[in-house]
Image (cartoon, rainbow, N blue to C red):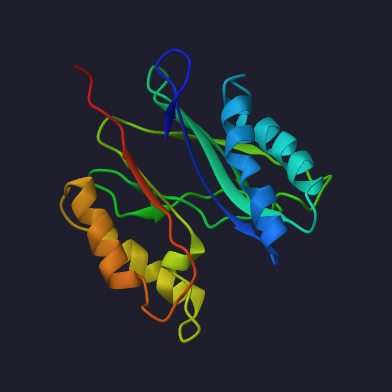
Length: 191
């Protein structure tokens, strides 16, 4: 999560899929490129198009990514997806839900158009971004694991750190060597 111009904040979660150590080293360039492009205040889909070209130029590398820009003045979040699992939204008085976003192709495929979806966010709303290492297992269907994630997000509002701990403790399987990234952001109430 990084503050942008004005009151905007960017949120990004991604995961590289590389087979060789050199590919992993190349993938380390993407966070810096993302931060540089974010400073230009680009539309999320346009930012992913630039990252796609950068990733395509890296040897044998692809990555999934969800990139979002929250604008509290408009009470909106603009989100684009590059082959990543959808974020979940939690709103008071509503059951947790996955955002309905076009999946998009992973970064590095090349020449694929991305699209931006705008979602309304009110003060107190939360967005949950995660990598597949949190929910994927060899023993369970992905739909079952995603339903378990939503189930764990139900209930009263809790401190974000407590929710992160609950998700990691309950969902991450000890035999899963896949990395896990988890980001939960809450829209602040006006001062």
